[in-house]
Length: 238
Ligand code: IPE
Ligand code: IPE
Ligand code: MG
Image (cartoon, rainbow, N blue to C red):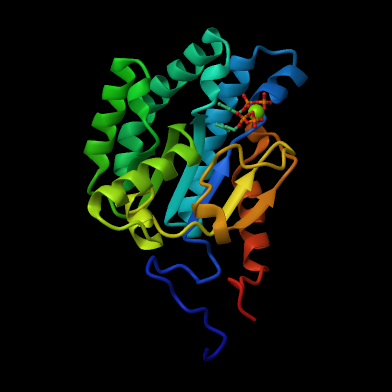
């Protein structure tokens, strides 16, 4: 490297900026409880945090932000909570779609969103379609997503195509068109993956923070990126 310049990645950002950041947005319920509010208020505040973090990620030069919004295990929650989360998704897409499009952000879905009510599934499809050609950044939302079932689906697709090796599975994962996962963040002090991006996390840098998701903001994202920039990735080598 000459004159201290950072090598530029494809997106023009310094190489120490992760290309792909994924976040397990956890702690909405506890945030609400601490304020004597219903859990739904925590989810609403969480959606606002997602907006702020998306903006900060884009400004920092992150190419892809993946947000875990609903796991395949979250169907175990009470019907009212599922209805609240579905309603929030509907509201968020309605309100944000034109902004995402204006900002050059492509929306991508991981998991099977067709399990949600038909109108929501359709709305999601339309949003994905409308933003498909956008290139500045990708926002991937994991909806009814589970890492194990993603791997099973990918292995089946690879087998049907003739060969099951790592490349074939990679190509069949929901994330096949995303950059490799560089940084995986979980908020709320829980130290587990909860079935998120199991394959992709193999060599991702992991960051667990105590902040509850609704309190996570642009500054928190910038602090996470600074933490990432200090790390040395070895991939098993020296
Ligand atoms: C994360 O917050 C949002 C979703 C899982 C949809 P939680 O709802 O899990 O909040 P806690 O973990 O109960 O505080
Ligand atoms: C993981 O959080 C799923 C999302 C953030 C969408 P959970 O709150 O569902 O995970 P567990 O149950 O604590 O493992
Ligand atoms: Mg939780």
